Length: 466
Image (cartoon, rainbow, N blue to C red; front, side, top):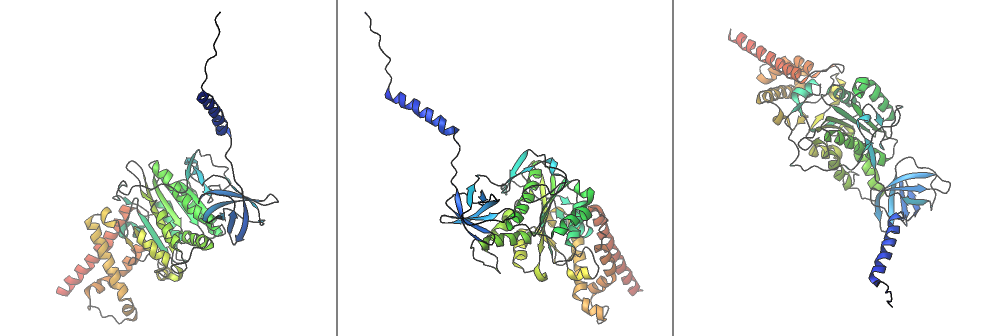
């Protein structure tokens, strides 16, 4: 009689089967969320304990009555998290629940954004319905190897005669627009928005008056300008975090279209408000002030934002950026203005004196410079630019003597030439906001001004000889 034998099962196989079962159950379970409590609120800074979240992560703060506020982690100290509300904050009480959401700031992007007005979180501010965009991008962006960037070697037509001819901007260049209040920077931005030869225009209105948003969209941009533009507006009454997000969002949208091969024009008004928002956040979480009340993190954030613009890798498009910088009290040595000049590829200075004299756009040619002009214009045009600058400077340095009649003609041949050509030079710099002057027309007008000066000088020489 044959006795059936049972198969021998090793103990290790039994434990392996059990482990597989438990692993399957673990993978199906949801992540454990550890809630914290709100312990302190000073100004707009919330301090939470009992939970953990990375800097840049999002949390929900829930009051006992059900009021919810979304906040972002901006720092930590020991077991305390420092949070900054994303939107309006009201109804918060001690020991409110703080729940990490394990999410980061991402926004939808796509072709459907063209012609829309958004806030700092990417939500529409207009009445055109929700955005129908499938792609999503983070606000942090991605860095480009500096050796992989395409060089700036192609001029960009911005439709403004004085900029096209004397301060020629290259495609992919980053320029600063330095101005005090009320000297016409918004009008100049609107002119460049309408007239610049670009595929997509991204406008970031950061920390400005809410009234100006509608005026800029309807009166300055108009329907023609909005057809190829995306406007990101975070007015001054928004939280400092949202104002910073508005700048990051505008840059992320510009990067998205650049990666698709588009020639993008990025206009940000203003870089100063972005820096002030970072200052508010840094001081609120305890960072010590360094330069005239600005903490060191402000000067670290500025290049992180600006360096994202520019030409992309080979095969990609470009982002030509104009950042307005508010010079408080018309002080050109303001800390933000000084830092911006060091990281930008040139600056255009608007003069209050010229604006008060009725010259628009009120561009101070002497104080303005384009650092890429030598790579994008011919030696002949560069020589013409230098001739114009020398005549302009000669007149300005003797302006007071000329005004009171103390200058004696014949004392300096260059000043004599500047006096004779001054009316034509002023007409050349003046431009109506409703008129666009192309790059070729601008160069031709500059040649005409200098040619007439040469003709007048030659006639004076011949008259003297006779």
